[in-house]
Length: 187
Image 1 (cartoon, rainbow, N blue to C red):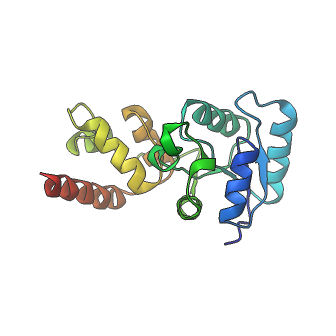
Image 2: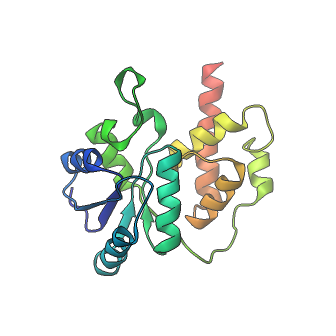
Image 3: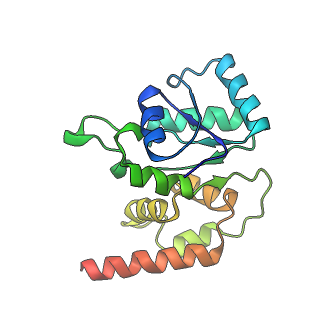
């Protein structure tokens, strides 16, 4: 699988793992203290080939994603659920711990952020699916994030990501029907 865009990752181990999974070039941020030189490389790559931000599913990874998104608008996003990025014996979380297949899946489900967007999905939609304000809300948001490949979110972030990534009500409905059916099967 050849990726046209340049993939932004956190470090050398992430680059090595991504290159095992796909044919791609990467830019390493070197952690969450991203300097202007790295941001300039990302801007240049975005203008020439496009960028996919693919950071670890933890606080520093989300911080890097936020900084790059803010400084370099128009990047695409790939997400890996935390449980697929967990090291053996629970010794850390990161892209470098994911399987080749999980990395390919994440990179084949890329979203582009839309700066101006219509809000097709509302807070009421999230409440009706039990994604906000219910005892199962957190677990349902986590399952939805995995199913739609949009990462882990709190309620406010979920509404924003669903609309920014232009996920339709039909896609939300289909994913939630699957989640509700899975919950029924677990009972």
